[in-house]
Length: 347
Length: 274
Image 1 (cartoon, rainbow over the protein chains, first blue to last red):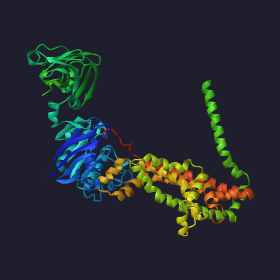
Image 2: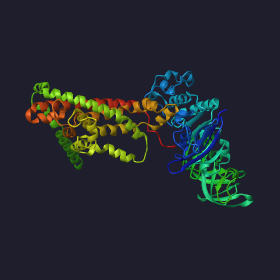
Image 3: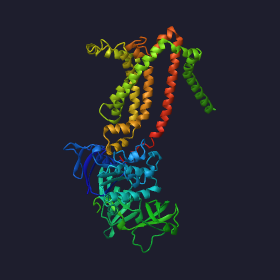
């Protein structure tokens, strides 16, 4: 089975990307904000930028090694690269794009349902079609590594879901070492076996998507996973809990141990909304909030409050007659409030 | 009220500018009847000058394309120390008076110039020959081509070059199959502008190559030579230049638009996740 291993330092704009990963026949997603060095990492593996030092190897074959002055050209590495915005050759038709690498397109056009578009130019294609052409082109040379740079970002929300499902099936079927770059945690969670959070050239956390959701290692990771971030001051509280006085003015409790300046993270789907503080309720944290906006997302509704964002079912919205401008109690359990920073650190 | 005053002032300025630019061009065709004008093109002076101009300009232009295109590709693709110095150097002939270019060429390639002894030893005489015309034309038109060609190659999305390389394309294939076709529109435009400048070259040629009819006398030099002897011939050649220039601009514009529409379908790559 294929494997990609790399450990590189690449100068980027204002920092140096330092990244080491071992990728077996699996998909690793690199998520992070713009300018975090995600694309630079892919370019270093493809040979399009030269690392300052380090090593890149695939199946034991060394592609780059600073110390031994090995630096294979991109054309001599075996990389299938789907570029951001796809980078299809605008002057060539679909078939010529796919066969640019010199191999025949046998079956690829059919496999990616673009055979009927063989003579079309990239300008004439929809976003989803372009993405399939880019994938077919990247796979035409039977690469040993697959690099996907924001493969879903150029798609409209309507087609995105379907294309994501297709891509998921494809990468699992290919079983190639695959690196996926995205700024969208949901895409990463849906497509990748593990997710690495890259911030300013450093890997903040690497783990299964569910691990990142359950135990985000720091506020950046929590916010990428979609959590609310609430800054505050932590003190030892009653019953071994940590009491956090939020900058908002309210006080919340967490089972995490910390002290000092901290950030509390809580996921929107862990927040429940009620009209009044319930009498018998296990949730310990209650924030009286004003409703700012209500946005339906699939079968749920994202409710933006003056304090944080909650995600509840459409039925709850109806039952509570939630309207922008109205007041509501947002509740979550002490076990669902993660505390980051402070002097004791987080688990 | 002030709004109308402004509109009137702008319209007046525009009218003066257009009239000033158009009048001399139109005047060329109005001095003598059109039939007489083109009858002048049968003269020996004209035919000799046309032959010299076409021959020397074609050779000079071909050399500029052959040497200039790879140079532009190199400068556009590479970031190296001293790059901005190179760019400035390339544009030097643009800001020099053509007479200075002529003096420079004499100082370099003339009999008593920098390379004079070497060229003499090889039995090569350049001053006042057609070779001198070719050198002068090439020197003066080069920056027009280089500037446009560098911009054309720079406008090719680097991720397309990157894509070609990860698809196994070596440097020749990247250049021939991706960079060159995608820059073709810009290269064509730069080539047309440079060609027009080359055809009109006067000052450097006059100093370095002289104005011998049938040898080094190009069309612009023939205009100057005929200016006092037979103004009608000068008018006729000028009229020809106007027509050639206009058709060059027109084709370039039409081609330019078509190219532009067919080769830039994508937004410039977002730098969002570098």
